[in-house]
Image (cartoon, rainbow over all chains, first blue to last red; front, side):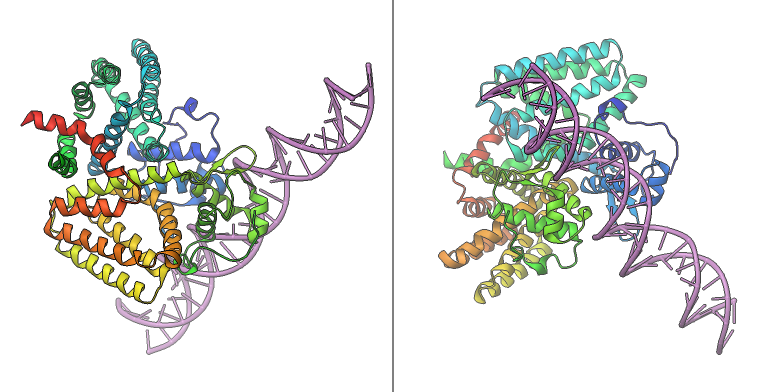
Length: 242
Length: 242
DNA sequence: GACGATATACTTGTATACAAGTATAATAGT
DNA sequence: ACTATTATACTTGTATACAAGTATATCGTC
């Protein structure tokens, strides 16, 4: 394992968190970015001495990462599992599953307050782009989606979000950092896409929402269509009932 | 808090687990069953002395329960949140969301091996009923659904299952214990329902699956219809594409 | 050289110790 | 009688200590 002292994870995102949570964040992003290679066996003692903390917070961090399937706790050592292409697809499956569920609840509610909040966030994202503040942009991106999900007040959907969020967050941050160097123009596309989201929620127009979802997940080809398939069953029945 | 030494959670289910996990299971079922009332503030030290263990495993248990939204970790003490009617509905939302997703993946695969496994489980459930072994019946019920979910090899759906499973497990066990006293005939209905599941997977007939889901979730009225609604959006688009 | 037994250096799980912070209760001052 | 302040008894977070178990390596025997 690389013993570099440079922290990949933004410090300001976790300033108030406990050591254990902070370590989890740092280890997570190192694993996802490939900085810590999959297959590596992590030992509590080694990690403790490397990060110059005791085993207690290390244990906490490892438990967190294990609950996210990023590492596997075994009898002797925690082996790094990491993320495969397949895993990333699967995360997007889940996100899509959640977001479609949320949207359908949403259209039954008064969304004016939510729309205002989301508008604020998109404007902040705009400023972040302007000043090339990738971390802020990523942060607001995550907040944007979390705000939508939180708005339906569904504690178990929220629970799922909380379980997938850390990995999502890392993925987003890493991809944004890459974009800054390689595809800067992408940021505007992403911003526009978020504005489409807001529009879909404002007008409660499903067609627009579909477009937003498509644009948002189009880097994971075929996933949206896949979900349709997966939900065809209930659909079919629904039509029969008519 | 009741300091009774009687354990509500079946010991044999967690014989091999660590103390922390065991405590989490016991505390969870006590909270869900109302044995520990919501609003109670749990202290690590008190729990440690009550269960006669150190704070380490207690901390582990509390972390687990907090990740399930059963308790809320605050600055001073962990306050018991428990489950509301709303929470239970929401758990079923998630379960339905998962199971429909899984089923749609399933019908694309060769299910012969899975069907055999499920048949075995239903037969074991049958025996469990015969001998009025509620714990075994509940255990097999959970295994049944887990087996289905596991079969599509989707690690993130599995992750969601793992996060909701403990609460589901407790709910199932508690409701089965109640049934044994009040509505013994229910067991046969439940068994039949599981056989319908197997049939749906065997024949890959969506109509049968709908029926199975309906029967399984009918104690949570209106939920299935609700999900249809929630997925109407994607459906609509799909038809437009045709 | 090959194989088996023991020794050693690791691992995790749990218990205990200490430090920093917070709420409550008791006390002093008005 | 009431308010402000200090004292105390709690809380969690982290560090350390110890016990039980596991893999590896060393050593002795064949």
